[in-house]
Image 1: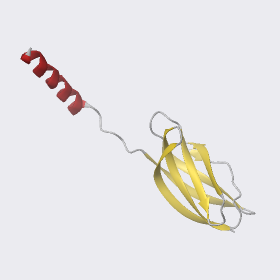
Image 2 (image 1 turned 90 degrees about the vertical axis):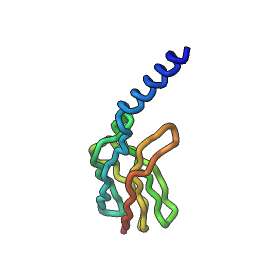
Image 3 (image 1 turned 120 degrees about the vertical axis):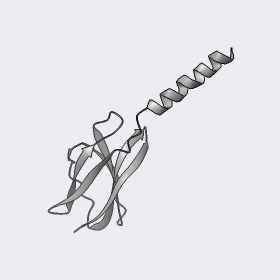
Image 4 (image 1 turned 180 degrees about the vertical axis):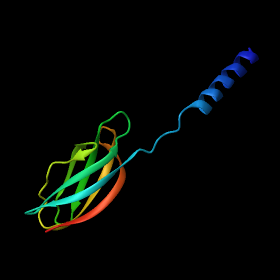
Amino acid sequence: MKKLALWGLAVVAVLLVSAPAASAGGGSITANSVSPGGVYFTVGGKATGGRDFFAIAVQCDNGYATRIFVTAPGDSQTIYPGPSSCTAELQAAQSINRFRTLQTITFAVT
């Protein structure tokens, strides 16, 4: 019985050692202004977890807030938050309503 238990522990140890390392994943985001008062985002990189998209959470000083999704790599839809200073977070979806921030940028809409 002890040999069986030790064999089981050895198998678990080998599986842990040979498991691939978790990838943090990543992408890049750039804000592009559109006249008048709009902005769209260019996203580069590869999404993680078998997904082909990133989320972009936008918050502005004037109260505007939204989350949009973009297929990676590619361009997002254009949003019109109005004149304000804004922050955009490039996010990877973890599960329903759970996101991990990969990169944060700030931009101004005039």
